[in-house]
Structure formats: structure tokens, C-alpha cells
Image 1 (cartoon, rainbow, N blue to C red):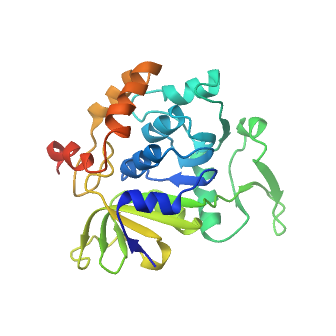
Image 2 (cartoon, rainbow, N blue to C red):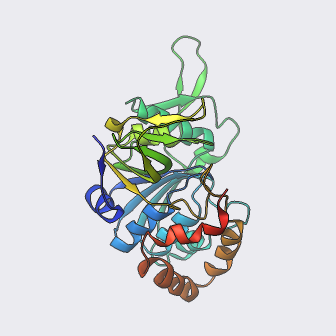
Length: 283
């Protein structure tokens, strides 16, 4: 059953050194505030799992928190490289990381298999692709009914998943609207799930018919963090801060500049700053 608590406590209770952890949100509702709290608490040796690692994983890798990345496409959306990730992979700075790369379809199927309690995912894919040459976890199976050769990869089952959402009701149910991505499956696949939300409400009135509601029994902890997805967007609350993504490319290009930015904007800041950052972005 979901417990309401400050973000600091939610992260401390549910994330541990050495965990496999997913911070999910596909362009929309990326849990930046939760990732920043994990950075402040200084966790180590994490396996970071995510479709499209972006700025938050660049920051976590740059702070030396990751030992492995499991991902599909790694980059700063709409901008280019993740420079701290590249420095880690190519130069071992601040530490080397192991990488396991998949396609978007592969990651989505792996989360789905994890949410279903299955050991691996089977799907059509990777035909003619070179990923299997560098990723030993991409294998194949033969369908016992048709004889068709299919791709097989391990399911994704994080120790803990973090997501951001629009609302939680006072019973601990969580409402996600807009582009949902893989958040639902990432929550159901995990041993524990932590959700930051824009607000806590009495009930979910006037919601879109295609919304997703995560029942309280799927969630370990909920923290109310307005603006907690910035610089990504929260449908119905604020738009994407494109300028921040462009700025990040320059910040991350320099090791010392990155360290200073993280000191001022993450290590010495708290989750309350996120509400201030989205004031001019309200939709």
C-alpha cells in the first residue's frame, strides 16, 4: 500500500547501493526531482535502466553513480550527445560503465515481460541489426508452433522504479495522463515503485478516458513534488523547457563546469526548486 512521505524519505527507504533502478518517462513526465534526490543521497554501483536515457542519466553517470546502463538510444532529445555518458564510456571518467543496448521495441517488450512475471521477452525484431553482435543478451528462440525464429531478451525487473505523474488521490492511487510511455509496465515490473506527483487530490474528476490509473497496491511511496518533471513536461501542468535541454549540452561538455553546475543546482538545492522552475512554463 502506498505511503505518502517527503521525497527524501521515499528515496532513502526504497533505493539502495547496487540496486537495478529505472527512472522512467518517455519525453513526458520524466522524474527529474526523484533523480536529483538520489544524486544528493550519493548512491553507488547502480544499474540504470531506461528507454532513451537523457539528462537525468547523464547527470547520474557524471556523478559516478552507475556501474551499468541498460537502455535503448542514448542522447539528449532534440539536441545530440549525452556528454557525461560518452566521457564515461570512452574515457572511464569518472568511472567506467558497462552498457547493454537494445531497441525501443526490445526494451518495451522486456518491461512487459517483467510486468507479467516472465523470465524473458519474445518478439519479432533485430532481424538484420548488428546489436546482437555486441549484446550477448540478445538471443533467439524457435516458435514451437510455427518454427519461426524470434528474438529473445531477458525481462526487465528493477529493484525499484521511479516515475512522475499528474495526481495521486488520498487513498494512494495514481493518475497518469498524456503520453504514458512505459511507466505502467515499469511500475508493475519492479519490486518497489516510488511516484512523485504534481498534486494530491480527493478524487480523480474530469479525467481523459484514455488515462492510466495505477492502484495504490502497486506503489510503495508517493511524494508530492510540484514541477518534479522539469525540464520535461507534465501534460495539463507545464510545457517542455527546450531551452534547458539546449543549455545542458554546453554544461555537460566540460568536466569542471558540470561539477559546478551539479553542486549549485542539485547538491545544494532541494525538491522545492522544481516548482519555481516551471512558473513560466504553465500550460
